Length: 242
Image (tube, rainbow, N blue to C red; front, side, top):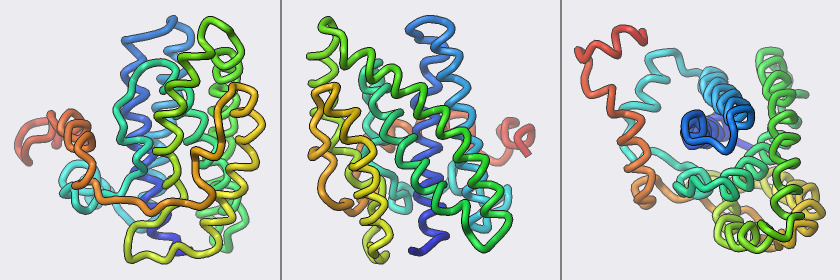
């Protein structure tokens, strides 16, 4: 498995997912839940920065990675590009991202590099808490007759988009490690999804390849919002950031 590439792709997913979650800070289910989701969003953004550091990027590199890279150089999962911000989709996306992140981080906690081990151990602990949070909501929405049908419909649309979370960008080796991670992910999620009447087979039997951000229309809209305050080197915001 090409680790720098994995770190970069995982960083993209974490960054975009954190951005999606941030909207719940002001548009909330209830205040306590929304504050918890805001905390998860903050940690996802921190994970993205950590992963970019592990990939060898300094602050200037990270700045370009998020704010200046063309869409053709982005290869995020379709799951975190899809801009479905309703609560059932948010819950299911959170579970899928956290569960995948736990598997990736768990494998890296035994890495030969101490910096990688320490960083991913911290991420693993936080992702376990994220998964616990989302699991409770999946059980609630999937187990209540008032929300079960709607949750199932959202899942039927969203689950197929998640099949590339362990996928590689074209030109990068897929490799057996990615397939094993995907299979472990299916085995872990299967019982929970089945209890909510969701079909784990929608995630696919093997990881799907990722596609370039330039082929995902919603990514341009999302990054346009993210980049709206970073329009040039002398706009006043960049200087504060640095």
